[in-house]
Length: 443
Image 1 (tube, one colour):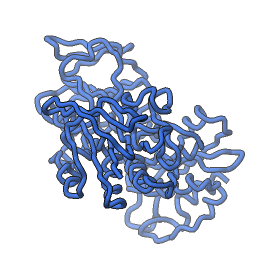
Image 2 (cartoon, helix red, strand yellow; image 1 turned 120 degrees about the vertical axis):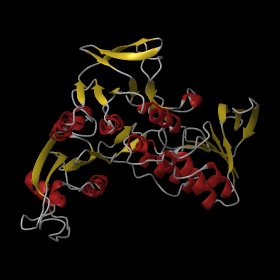
Image 3 (tube, one colour; image 1 turned 180 degrees about the horizontal axis):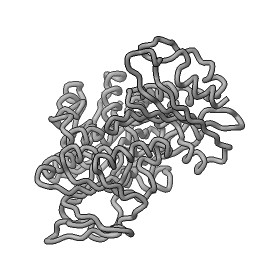
Image 4 (cartoon, helix red, strand yellow; image 1 turned 180 degrees about the vertical axis):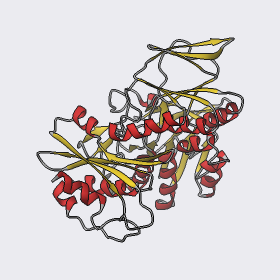
């Protein structure tokens, strides 16, 4: 069996490693445009802030590691075209320009995603940088020492982490977003208010509900970011507006959403026979809403890449969907969420939504120390099904959202969560777990 994998980021790496482990006699070839694999872009901000000093540590595998597994690893090779009917690919060797053809019995598309680049006037100037891959990371690190005024555009997780990292390096930071709140896709205002206050306290300028309309510069290098409401001086601009599926290679050839996300079934199969797809180029089953959405996350990618290997020969292990569970640390605050926020649930479903917020100390007050935690539960008033939740505290209680992720995945109700068995030990919690307590409050 000859298997060709196109793209080798998180999903691709998981796919090839597991394919070779499960199908030892298979011939596995992977084509990757870059000269590296498995770079953890979520660690770029940690690198900028000095928490992780060596960006080489943000790789969890290498081309050499794949070669040792017996995988035919073709770095700096760009797949130009795919002929699904004849099961062939046209490939260009980027180092010498050679173009050749290859063929497959099974094809795996792990094409990943790419940052959204809006057609803003002046966007092609120097020092306007994306934040996605190892090359971007190196450029950002290289330029950081020589600049003082940084403008980060996009207040999702990557944007806010970078804003904090630059501020910790002593830079003058402005964070711009068209939404009224930071991290609005992941958190409701009870949580973003605290995070925004932390940024303001540390001197980060928040330019929210503002749309960038142009970049101004001198001698081809950006000097100012102009929005519909103000302008901000900039020595360096980082674009973190969002991601889109990097699926132009198969546009019009297989079934996709309008945004290009490849449609797959529960076994990672596309609309073409013997063609699989996984990771940021695909749709995912979003359990809280019970629909399909585009949610590019590394956790989804590695899971889906692993499932490709399991289902390569015949359907064996189903994809269970995702709750888009995520976590972030902003200054002293440990924050996590799972499922839908109240705002997203109301905006994207026709369910009758309700929510409850509980603030309490995470462990008994007779202990030497304790911290306040705020937890929120979002649910359907009719079915009582839990749809999501969020937590914030200076104590790291983020694992509670992993627990709640299982609750959402299994369609549990607020009544069931209220009476679910959790341990009690004063070092860690109160007799009623915070998850029990917030569900009881909902009752």
